[in-house]
Length: 486
Length: 118
Image (cartoon, rainbow over all chains, first blue to last red; front, side, top):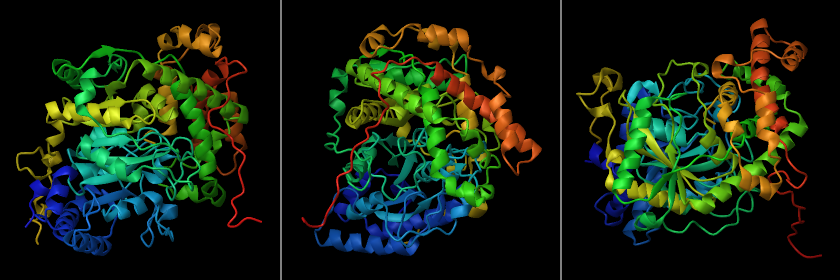
């Protein structure tokens, strides 16, 4: 019998137990499937659960490990993938009604790589329709409705990797694959209190993944620790000649938390007087103090004065309008949950060809400026989000939500890792995020691992299973989690 | 993408004016970026706060009028969203660049892949 404590363990520990045969991949997979069956009706984290496929993969892993054919730390580890990566024989809906029955005849490159690593696919994770590409202002803009935040069931998970954030936070999976165009890994990681890595643009192949913006989309892991992010990255990174934007770069070097004290690190302070939640600022500054007390050299810095958000908005608007023009032509954009989605094609006509090229030229300047900044600093720390998770019924149009750092990172293709660093006044998670230079994921991971070595925020568990949890956070007794059977 | 386009537009509109006016001497000398850009942009296009977000524009009215099949409410939304997007467009259009700054991304000639030599 596998209890919840095991399901909340990071990959680093699960893989040791699997390799030493203290734990069976089949039993572990069954235990996660049991937890998904119990909690998914409440959380709406999964779009599709692939129990039989998962058990077949798990049996194969068990047989191979038993025969001494160990493939590495993901061998026998279950996971979920955002429903925008193609999976052969399993629906890939892109979270959108017009694609509800969509099937592909080949796996996405990332699925193939994870299969080669021996990972066990538990299913496809819920997401905001079309990864939010045509605009949305409510958290329920998805084929599967709103995903609920395990830290507060009346709160949103953020998007568009909404199911990925909820599934990892609730221990429905040890890791998930998410995607980020602008904020979709960092924000759900922040709101759900998990560790999420946005790799450098081009680091992970997107072949077989839905295209929202060819020059902004990235795939990356969401996990229970920074070290787990690194373990997944090690297996999904690498050049793919069939992805025209794939980078032909060497793999990221291993992280080294011991090197953090010799790094030069800066932190950015959001102006919480203008927007954001003061309790988020308090948690962020406490994390900065923790790092300083531990001997890390930190100094305050400012983002270069460039129109990151404007350039990112223009590039994104133009690329999205062409990515989904089939929906516009067929009229099926009207079938999306967000009532404003069809209007985005009309709005995009305001962008001229010259505007797009100009934005791409501004982007060049932004890239050089950020590269210069990282010649001075090894990493930039900032709060992943200025807010904690919003109430599910909140209309985002009522929120002043500026994101210049996220815009800079995504516009310039830079990696970032978000890790939990405390809680806001409402008890919802807050994250510390480290952005680094392109292809230097190892520095951000080193810093995040160092932080997780001196704090225990990443070990906190949501109140889902606790009887003392606030009502809004607690799963009703009628669907309480059964003890997974063996 | 985590934000709606409207929210992105709102965020951009809400950029503090102070950020637009800070100098960047090092980058200017490196890339030929004109020093007057920020001050000009700030004078010509003062950044509205979220409370002052634009609701309408001539282009927005035109696009809303020309599109067939929209309801009155949808035409109003188009006008507002175009006006918000135009804040980003104005910022990009006002940004001065010298001729040596190429667009990001590299166009490459595509080599033919053959399964065998001829």
